[in-house]
Length: 155
Image (cartoon, rainbow, N blue to C red; front, top):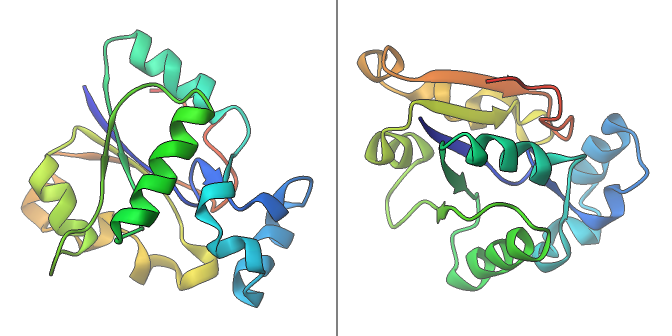
């Protein structure tokens, strides 16, 4: 199975979110806390790396999707994933003139895991709701609360 997992907000968070409640973390993003844009210092949410490793161990293809667009920021997220022992997998991002739905339709995963984008506008910022109706029939979607983590997901 090909699994696409959104990074920021789903499996990674800014460093000042450590030891904060999910609600406090959402508020930090809304308030523009400085570490929100310090992508190189992002940290895993919960046991995300270990959870994804179990999926990789079951021969699932792991693909990460970042909201970052500049090569510098994409590389920062790539480095955070590697430094925090996330299993190997491609790191996809929106290229010129692409929206998230375009990236997903290009990749054609079996499963998309993303957060609800509470801090940045909710459903209008998510990926799955914007996929074509035809494509929605071929993909499973799991939505978690932003910064709530994926520790309890079973696939």
